[in-house]
Image (cartoon, rainbow, N blue to C red; front, side):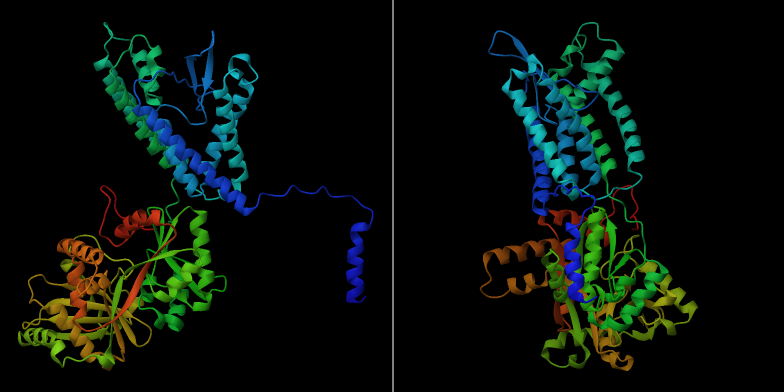
Length: 609
């Protein structure tokens, strides 16, 4: 049968007799779903503002009651302008209490991140509440008040937006969340309930006091609202400040319970032996593209590969931030596939995506996937062919090098694989002893280990004094076949000043013997600010920014690191921070500080992801 006959036959099939299919209702379009999902978030934000304003507006003249088996149903008994009294009810989550405000704020946050569990919770609360409101409007006392119709309409619109935007909420949570939430809720309720009851007992103004069950009931009601809800307990009359303290305590516990319910998975997957083997194969082919490529082999990272396996993004999850570093590994043509896979995984787990230290080339590709860029600083790269100690510009470096050399210091340069095991053990011990603090710092530009058998191509610079005692060391990781990238710097605090500069110069002068053509030194954060801010004609904003960074350099050595690198007259290569939303930058900054080892949360060791 010819192709034309096949086409005609296929076109005639629908006209033949047979069971007719019922057409499916069209699903909401992506734009409508996104707008509906956004509407639910804005509703929760506005309700949170309303609740906080209501808490701050004391005294209250309206009564808030809990109904519908613990669902957040609110009824207010007020005298109407007519000759009878009626009952009012408010929209979903609108109560005069910090607990409901905390619930609205937290639900808005997790709904914004697409959490499926948050969508389910809202549907379980708002759905039955809307049905109850609709049923109540069939009764005479309720349907006479316009406010009840407005509350029902707002709650119904919220439920409708949930239904329309349901496919936008597909991020999963940690499987251990329910058990943790129960434990946090039980412990928090016991602690705050006990403290609140004690506070009520001490501050109760009613003569003779009140029985313990009534004090406990008052405490729990005050945890819900600081309005007149608890005033029905006649045997208790506590001051307003005590009511507010109880409400704040219960709100804090409720926030902890919500966090336990909706926290993102911790990202426990680490780099496997198979992943490391694949990454090493990619580095062997494309490792010369990025000076930070070898740091992808950190074993506290995870790797996600492109569908073709020709590229990968390595990352670590810190505080619900999926933090990648450097450029993707592998063929640049396959980078988009790896980036897509990484972003898809981040969305699936409600992780905030971010990239530390991407090059301009990689930043451009990340930007095509919806990420924005912020310049972090510049990487100092020295071209060996252009490096020399001659000339007036290198006078300070030349003098420092000669001074340390005259003091009897010598440098030995070897590949790690050429260092005997016993000597490497001594160097590792000295490096640990010379480390500043107990935390191993570095993430985006550090390997996090020393002396591993798999890192034999790394280069070690060992500096000894006139008595042949080790006083400092530098370790560099491979940057392709003909490059090195600085990994580790350690020195004895009692040694000669300028020892690190002396070792760096020795490497640059002898690099050709190792076949090295370029060396990546330290990263200078905000380098362009210091350089442009010192120029004639710099604007007031740039000068102010430079002054601010200079002030903070007293503690964080921002400017001194730039000056130390500038001595070698390097080529400056910009590095960028990539992020999805500007509002995520504080969260990303905190996660980066934790990953790099500059910040450790109290009572918590740094969790490996």
